[in-house]
Every structure is written in C-alpha cells, then in structure tokens.
Length: 185
Ligand SMILES: C[S@@+](CC[C@H](N)C(=O)[O-])C[C@H]1O[C@@H](n2cnc3c(N)ncnc32)[C@H](O)[C@@H]1O
Image 1 (cartoon, rainbow, N blue to C red):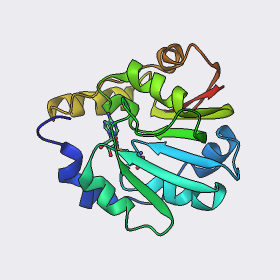
Image 2: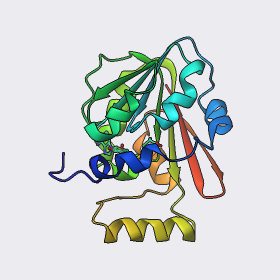
Image 3: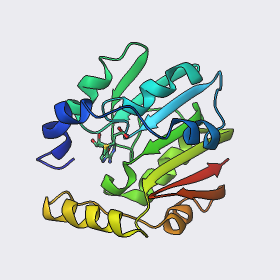
Image 4: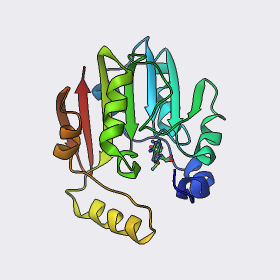
C-alpha cells in the first residue's frame, strides 16, 4: 500500500457523494438478484454495495483504505474487509458475484487483481468491472487531473480490461462515459 493514501484523506467527502447512478445497469450486467454472496472489491465507502444490499444474500466490501472502509462499516448489513484486490483473504470460489466499480484504474497490479477476482469467483458466477471509459475526452481530462494529483491512476480501455480476464467468457457494454466488462466463469 502507498505511504500516503489519497482515499483515506478524501473519504469523508466521498461518503457524501450522491447515490449510485448506474444501479439498473449493474443489476442487469451482474444478473442480480442472487441468493449467493457478492464481493465489492475496491468498494470504498460502500456506496455501491449499499445499493446492492437487498439484491444478494450477503454483501462484502473489500478495500485498501481504512478511511473509506470506516464509512462502509456504518451501513447496516455490509461486511467491510481491509484487503488489497491483488491478494484477497477469501477462499477460492467463495462468491457468486464479484464487482469492482470505479476502482480498477486505482489498482497498482491490475493483472494480479484480475486473477484474484477470478480465483474467488464460483463456477457459473460473474465478475462486473465498471470503469470510466477512457476513450472519451471527459475521462481523458479526469485521468490527467488524477496524474496531476499524483494518484498513480492507470486507466485501461474496455478492450484492455477484457484482455486482463482472458480466461473468462466476456462481453463489453458501454454507455456515455462508462464501460462495463462482464466476465462469466
Ligand atoms: C474511486 S474509489 C471507488 C469506491 C467505490 N467502488 C465506489 O464506486 O464508490 C476507488 C477505491 O479503490 C480502492 N483501491 C485502490 N487500490 C486498491 C487495491 N489495490 N485494492 C483494494 N482497493 C483499492 C481505494 O481505496 C478506493 O476506496
């Protein structure tokens, strides 16, 4: 983990962000509801996980930032776990759904994370990666701003994300400035 974590610092602000605006698309891509367990990797304050809480049997939020997780813990029914997505403290095949929203570009070892998300996914399960679509100008400007803030972000185009999960059966959805890569095991 980096010595200075931007997300520890901005967590109180992040917690005040509005509701998750892509709920319908996520429900469709992740094929929810399910009675099984859902992992939100890089789930931060639990903003997305909280919106999905009634759509899965159990919702776990894993994140590298304790500052962000503190807010996830304030939502009833979410299980916060301090962990980096490159090395998850869960047994193999222990989640029916795994999502990562707006976090992959912040992850340092993206290939290792893809392998971990795949490892913890049950056969027949789905991974959904939601990312800002770097092919658009607006997201390119956000990427530039994050570089100036020394956030070490590394945005991938949807096709590059799909390649990280080459072991799965994948498809890409895109709308406005967001892309969803859906991986089936
Ligand atoms: C922009 S926030 C998104 C949070 C949440 N997914 C949402 O959409 O509200 C990115 C999150 O990714 C987390 N993160 C960055 N690198 C990570 C890693 N390697 N493993 C786990 N979490 C990570 C950060 O701590 C932060 O909470």
